[in-house]
Image 1: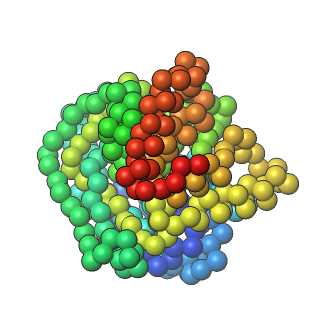
Image 2: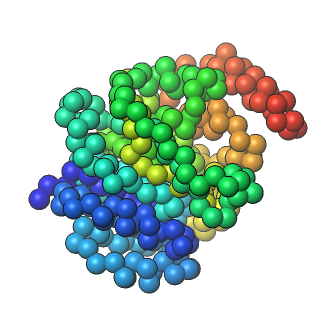
Length: 315
């Protein structure tokens, strides 16, 4: 049977959350889906948890060596065989109605190959120091609209559009596998050129197409835990450590990935700078866009204003 949807979960040391992400996908009775879980050499209880699942739609894989997050995503996605693909965070989940809703929107917009959905949040125990007693945030509207990728990209760079609402190859977004392969082909065989894979995917996707479908019905639960990318700095520590380790290995990785810059932006939570950093790294970015002094000035002005609001020192 032809696989229509591939859900890919790259995981590393999140055994306490992973079973819920897996179950949310396998609860579906659909047979035209596949779930790929790639274990990046976890040292916790992940291996045992994966052994306990028995479902023909589930495939468990592992890279040859421990990889930085972006490299692991690249490896895991390469194993997907579905027409549509997405990466699901290992502390996230899919909605029970996700595949039926996707069928409906894909039928309505037959030319679309990028879909972005509204966010619904679940806050895991352990991040109360940031989010207080909030557990769930969910709002749904049956609204859908074709949006301009370039307009929204500009607005996100200037802080006028929430960068979290941009189409991503990650929880809340799904794209055609053919688009992913097209981007790789244009970028010397790699999709990712930043250690922030979710934000970078939005930049690459927006540069590759002129439009995307935005729906206001959440298709995923965006889980927030004390190990999530937005809270934990593990992504940057892993990137520095594992990239150094891979220098003596035959595994190739893009040369222009900087952990230091990304970590500084992460610490200061400058969303527009996340986008700008990824834009500068992306091979699809035009020379004029990359060299635009006015864009650089506007982005830095936005960062300056945000830093004053947050009373953070500018370096």
